[in-house]
Length: 286
Ligand code: ADP
Image (cartoon, rainbow, N blue to C red; front, side, top):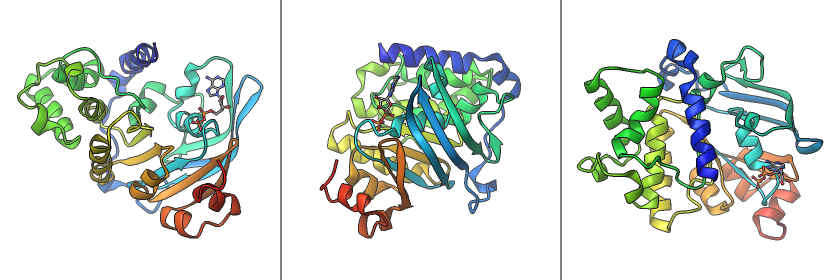
């Protein structure tokens, strides 16, 4: 059911006609000012109905780095992640207060083009959700729907580039016509990442991307994240603190809908500022 809903959302997002006209390659990381935050989040509150799920979140996310969000179950990590590309808009009776700027642009302003936002800020889910189609068609899906190219050779190049970027090319190059569902879960997750890269996002949101995978497949995703951050900004929700410590540059600890601490990862895990962070990280709490 979840996969079905995600697919519908993907189709709605990608089939939005405006994107065809407005499609443009994302700001290349080489041209970005890496000293400026890509996301500036200020006093963000989020409500499910009247229930406050996020309270006064203020945070800056730097480009070409990996930011990890940790905290116990139900503390608002995924809700926050979904605020960054307005995925929560698909849930009825929710609302947001505060501000999120993406490269200086208010993503909650009336003028924002949602399809374009979700192309710029793509998302990888906990469970790999490839379409039951060939490997090639999965990766070509986005470029086709947004009308990126009609040229077969160019489409081939985009598919190959995306599969190389997601470290999957060598494994699938002779199986591009095979059904994506016949591959391992780890390969399916990297395929989902390739599908996302094919429309050139600026930011990749990852919601527990390795929690359904075995340790070797998890390691490959983590290695891939290191490669991807050269060109993309990554925000990852993980319940696995070791993973946050291994992969991220910054870590935010959420607790009961609040951001308790946001620090460089090394600091968070060795000399956190808050007692609550220390208690959570050392396992005394949570
Ligand atoms: P986490 O990712 O840290 O596990 P969530 O963001 O999923 O936390 O949840 C934060 C709070 O919001 C929880 O109390 C959860 O029950 C609530 N919540 C999450 N999704 C919904 C929803 N679709 N409708 C109502 N409440 C929700």
